[in-house]
Amino acid sequence: MTLNSEIEYYLVFDTNVLYQAYEKKADFTSFSFNATYKNVIDMINQLDIYTKVVLEIPSVVWNEMERQIIEKHDELIQRYRSTIKKKLFPEYSIQENDEINYPKYIETKIVEYKENLSSSINLVEELPIASNNRFDSIINRAFKKLPPFEGKEKKSDKGFKDALLWESVLEFALKHKNSKIIYYSKDNAFNEFLHNEFTENVADSSIFICNNENEVKKQLEIWAKEIDKFSYQPIEDFDENKEIVDWLNSGDFLLQIIDLNFGLVEKSRLISSTAAHLISIDNIECLTSNEDSKEYYIETVLQFEYQLKDEGTTSEIINTGIRVEVFDNIVYSIEDVYRIDEDESES
Image 1 (spheres, rainbow, N blue to C red):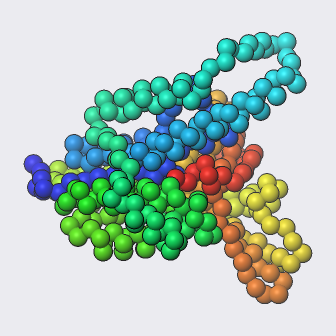
Image 2 (image 1 turned 90 degrees about the vertical axis):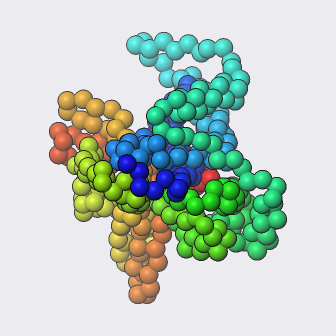
Image 3 (image 1 turned 30 degrees about the vertical axis):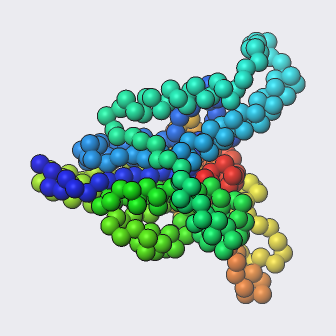
């Protein structure tokens, strides 16, 4: 029995939640969101609210992810061609296929993926780009450098897509009265400003800005109770990645991050000590697995704090992609760490 049939529930994704990190694992023959999307779907289905919560994938996100995969394809295929020309092995024979129009090719794959999403039991819609009615508001943000248009370090051009997406969310909320919206974005720089702006401009709806899966989980559980408190069952806390998550939260992980030379930690005679902190784990994917070892690709947000010799301090927050090998389920070794390109992960 549904106790509240008037309220509408929507979950809106930002690009930085769904994008694929193509540097370490790339399949350019198809298109898909990353593992986070499936994790959210699993939470909704486990709470049995899949007929009530509508997943909104903004047009801005679809367009941005299409651009990302095309740009990465063009970049990495050149590297690949260069590599195979320089290295020959008797065990391998590589044949190059006929040249294709990759943008047109991937466009058809995106259409297929959209159709697959629409045919699932979950409610999936495309949130349209803000109409011309929001043009004045976007221009106002640009000139005044209001969030999220200012982007990072006040770079207005980097915040344009963020502003367009946010204006799309505002317009959507104004058209869907008495709605509750989760806006899932990993960019938490402007949470308070955006939440206040939404509250001031949208009187009869509410928004919950979530920056990680745990925050989304908590809000979905609250919604499930509202929808039907009698049949509500909390999400089971089963985590197949529990062991590696425990290691990521250990001192050994932070020690390896600092001690191994991956180019993340600043080295200077002015620095007396360095400390690392794990802020969040954004994605875990198992790349390979056999009896003796497993290889993982993990996305995290790390904070590095530097104690200076003049007793001052400074810090830096970095989005990272990490490749980890696990041997015999007990030995964890960081094999590579790199900064995730902001242009790749931002919308």
